[in-house]
Image (cartoon, rainbow, N blue to C red; front, side, top):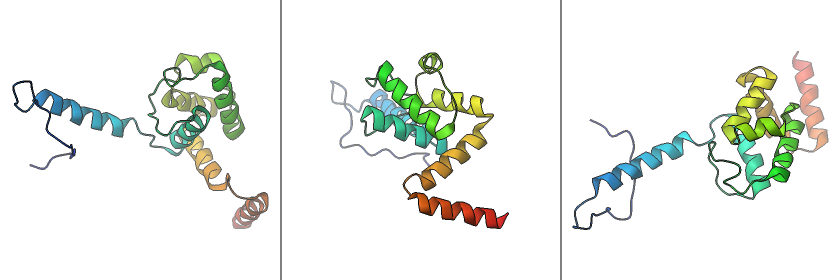
Length: 149
């Protein structure tokens, strides 16, 4: 039998009696699994997570982290939604955002607005590809695409 995951720890958790604390070991494994499940997986989730990290000045972020628990407030929410609007051309209201204030919820709202995850991920992928390029290079890429069709 092969283990599904390996978790490296500095020392074994012990009970007050000095025995290995199996419950603490299970919690370590569960938190490691949760971390993997809560990491941005799609192009859209990654892009939206990056917007949140930039606006909220964070290094790490889970797709299920609550915006308000991270120190977010209405002004920062408007900044995030403004950036989302500029990338996806999709109008998400503050009220919609406040109902499920996390990266996963915002991604779902954008997917609902644009008609599915495929188009949203395509937009995020293209945005990521050209966001830091000078306008001239973007225009050249677009011309190359026109020639292919």
